[in-house]
Image (cartoon, rainbow, N blue to C red):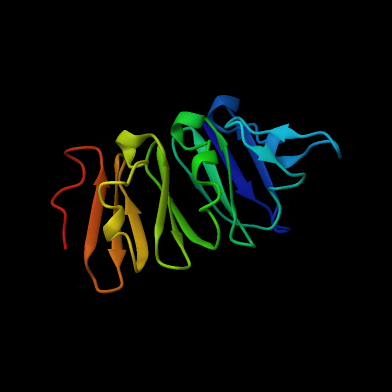
Length: 167
């Protein structure tokens, strides 16, 4: 396993198994002028783990919401450590929730962006049209449930873990 903690100055310290996100050096530091890549093969800028507001973790990856609403991820790419496919959508992020191998982010618009292992909720394409006006997301080990402003709930993830789709 691995751990991450937000310090009082908004920076992050990580420790533990590097494969599980215990090594965040690729998103923490780099020499000026030399590009760095995180484990998920996403280009990073120097000091991206500063101004961190929230951290969420899957079993082997981390996602940090920065003060400007962007998200930085690191750890196992198959467990959400690689957000490169959705990085352009990860703006104005309000909250992030995690299953064992995937992340779901609520944007300020009330829409939801997911990434990570498809079988653990990282693929929300089947319910995407219903993921609007979302104000909260909860997670189990293998599925997510989004609560919309009208009180309805939408669930997705591993078969047998989502229950009935409530509307």
